[in-house]
Amino acid sequence: MPDAEKSINGARQGIGSLELGLKILDRIAESSHPVSLKQLSDTLEMSPSRIYKYLVSFMRTGYIVQNVQNSYSLGQASLTLGVSALKRIDPIQQTFAALDRLNEEQDVTSSVTIWNGHAPLVIKWLDASIPVAVNVRLGIELSPFFSVSGRLFLANLPDRRRQEIIESFYKDPPALPRHRGEPMQKAAFYEHLGQIKAQNYCCFYGDYLPDINVMGSAVYDINGNISSVISLMGIAGDIDVEPGSPYHRALMECTRRTTDTICGRRG
Image (cartoon, rainbow, N blue to C red; front, side, top):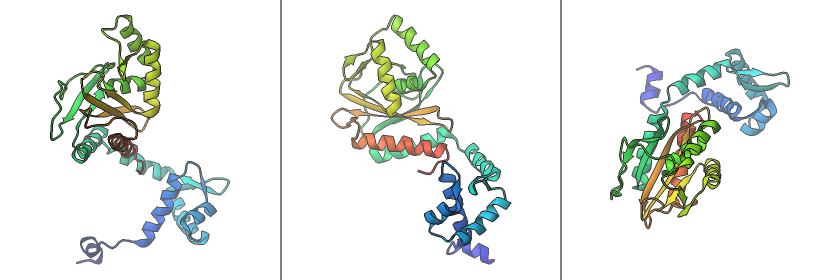
């Protein structure tokens, strides 16, 4: 058996110099501005002369470029590699996988919704071991005003589209949206959406389903647009939706990690 094959199927030995070179490339990629040789040396605790040899190879192959200040940033080859990887990421499948893990870890009723053009649509629903008795299931269209996912989508819509939907609703509302039991007039609702967008979080404290708490958080795509919403719900006595609660932290970590995966960022 060739040595290379032995390495893969046996002890899985790697090429240390390649791994070191990729660490250097990672540091350049993680920086929001070009990185100098000294900065790389200090961060990686390696001699400048050693790092420079790797930089020369990366420049020859187009993975980095050097600017007039003798600092380094990613080159065209790195961009091509990154774009190719991102094209292979399916945002919805990544979100489905994240919901599966969250549902298993937290054992709480959970769902994924997408925006169908005018309202949230439930495209995945997972019950807890003790299901919650609600009339929401796969394929159901939810209200933009009376669901956590609806408010998250509204908060993230372009200003003009959001205004069209809200102004039309408030001309003759069937009921006023509530938060913590308090009805919201139009100005208060706009302010409420601003808070939701800033926090990437919306929750109901039994506002629409007696004794049922609901929370939701958005997953975003590489352009910063909302892709989907992950929601959790449960009996008020069992699921605490206050910011900082264990369920809140689990949900926010889930949507953050999923967004990072879709956008090609390391968590």
